[in-house]
Amino acid sequence: MNYIVLDMEWNQPGYADTALCRNGVCMKNEIIQIGAVKLAEDKQKTGVFECIIKPVSLTSMNRMIKQLTGITDEMIDKGESFENAIERFRSFCGDEYVILIWGYDDIRILKSNLMFHGLDTSWLPASYNLQMIFAQQTNLEKRQYSLSFALEHFEIETSEKLHDALNDAEYTAMVCERLNLEEGISNLKYLPSNETTNTKNSSVLIKRKFRYIRRRDDIWQNGFIVRPVCPCCGQKMNYEKPKRIGLWRINIESHCEKDGDFMVVLKISETPQGTFSVNQQIHLLDESNRDYFEGKKTKRHVRKRSSSRGKNKQISDEEKGLEEGKS
Image 1 (cartoon, rainbow, N blue to C red):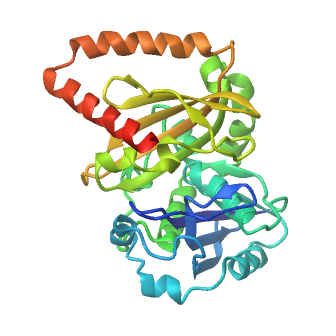
Image 2 (image 1 turned 135 degrees about the vertical axis):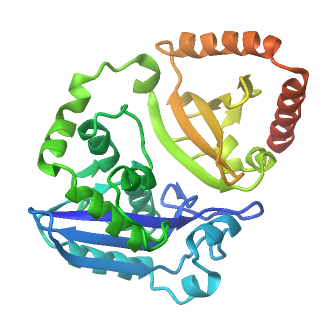
């Protein structure tokens, strides 16, 4: 059994970009680089893989992603096709392996890209989130720690820049050397049955993260974020007026004529670099969780009354932006 430590970089729509939709998938995160390190059972490195991919939907680099990754329009224009890259990657992985990733996004985005291109997804093996193993085995809080945090924790020097897929895979493999992978994977297998599942989390159908958003106002004009299609059938939905919960969360109730009611939850955060990211969750909305979201509406009113005049003005302006974008 081999371990494949996988990392990817992907492009995202800019302010004026329109992503293609195929096979029920709208390309909001198009893979442009794959990096991987193969480890034997004893965690010794036995191979590396890296490629730049030529996109077919988002053919120009998002300015912020270009700045972060160093990947240019010229580089992706000379890249290989996604189909060829996946064929080479599968050959590199071999027959008996599991995939190790830092976070939850990579496998989800890999699967959506495969579906977009009409490629088989059944070959994807078991994958395990190293963030969870790291948190368990270092006695830290159970939350998502960045790769840079883990490198600093283990005092691993970084001579190459992060946010390069192969570099990140190489550094993640170094973290793996400090972890008991066999024990960590075994614990992760039993984790879901050991945790209490609450109503609000069990209804989540889709989780997405939108990164490198230059301005907060750009969020409200991005239909992929504030007006996603139905997670079940891929058709457009009807939306109610957005409900603000504090300054950093928005609930948007939606309705699909075919599949019923949903709640789009947006959690906004600001990065140290001054850009913004949005965690988007789409919940199936029914009687089991409607009271929960109604409770959130009540909390919203309490917070809004206690907030400052400046924050109230910001909320009002952003809700206006959402309404204008919806029309």
